[in-house]
Amino acid sequence: MSSPSKKQRTNGHDVGEGKDVVRDCLAEVNEKGEFKRVEAQWRRWISEDPGAEFPAEAGRYHLYSSNACPWANRCHCVIKMKGLEDIISVSIVHPTWQFTKKGVDTHAGWMFKDPKDPPIPNQLGIGSFDCEGCIPDFVNNCTFVRDVYELAKDTGKKYSVPVLWDKKKQTIVSNESSEIVLMLNKCFNKFAKNPTLDLFPERLTKEMDELNDFIYPNINNGVYRCGFAKTQEAYEEAYHKLFENLEKAEAILSKQRYLCGDTFSGMDLKLYMTLVRFDPVYVVYFKCFGKRIEEFPNLWNFVKELYQMPDVQAITNMKHIKTHYFTSHPSLNACAIIPARKDTDMTTPHDRARFPGKMETMA
Image (cartoon, rainbow, N blue to C red; front, top):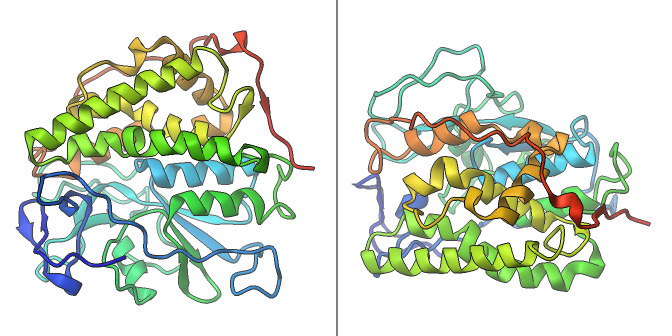
């Protein structure tokens, strides 16, 4: 990953230049005002080979996650669905970003808290947001996710989650969610409670890649391209692509139960993570006003079906989701006011059973 050559801005403040820049996602904007997500830097792989650099072992790896972040949340969901909770430990950050080196720079990011800790305000000292649902860093005893990266001698200076950590080598294996879920799906089956579940069947690789080609840039990342755009032109381009591709996903799900036909896959989880956040957050916060997910009959029933899967519901924390977005970016919501919206009940019956559906199992 190449470092930007121009000054970046985070919450309206310069945080560095060139290779010394530290940044969060609000800084990843080009000259046209378009949000351009910087790729993950840590891209190593766990292997089933016991002689590999990072072999699959019970108790060796730790996931630093967030209930609010859709990318990290999907990784945690795969751990739950595969039954790896006793094999890979997890920490859950507080949803409200904090200054990570106050007085040194103005970077704001993820902080670890214990659920018994007192509530904290946003970066401007406004509000009071409790620590319920947090799991502290009991592996490295770090205060911030930034500290974890610095333990690994990171040079990328983007302190994001998820982070898959090797306790034995004291380093980061990967911070790329799309690759972490592949490792979780396949590499730890001899330890898993649900080893036969296959969320990424090889026979569906081509189909999942084609789906990802429109879902990731235009929907998953598309909401961020709307919300973090710095020009009207950049916003409107992202906005129109977002709703064009939501309609495309709606059309697919009008004919079949899941994105890959009758087989539930990791792509369904990937789409769900954005859709479940859409009405409570993205419609208002990211200016995605065109249509609520509840107004797409097939997308909305798809969300309800996935939410009603016990492992998916267990990692869907609407309080953390809303608290994070509305309290972590003072340049977008300085007073950290969370809309008083009553969430729609996602436990009401869905209609997806009108199509056949199944979970793929490994041989």
